[in-house]
Image (cartoon, rainbow, N blue to C red):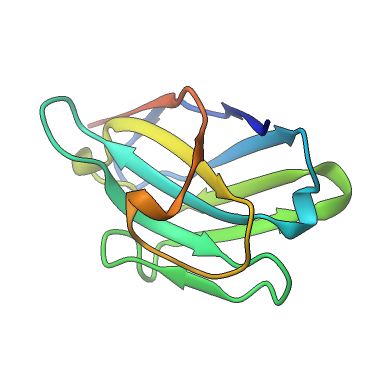
Length: 124
């Protein structure tokens, strides 16, 4: 069983930066495909970025392209999401997700494990 715990959320001003972390336990972290999503209340989860297990290939969705970067540290079993130039639309709960197989995917059903989420609030 894979467990994911996000951290690093909080309040930030428009145009600011924030780095989210997601610590994983259970299984072999280096073998997981990993992703970040966010959800605004009343809306569907939105894909942000993903990173493959073995090659480290990344894929960033349109919501974060040019501003968000996903990375991971296998030694720490942690995946990160660095966010720059945050806008008011960035106010949401941010989730990390994992899949026990290789690949890079931007859709929810690819991922079988999810964290509890961390709140990010962007204000002027």
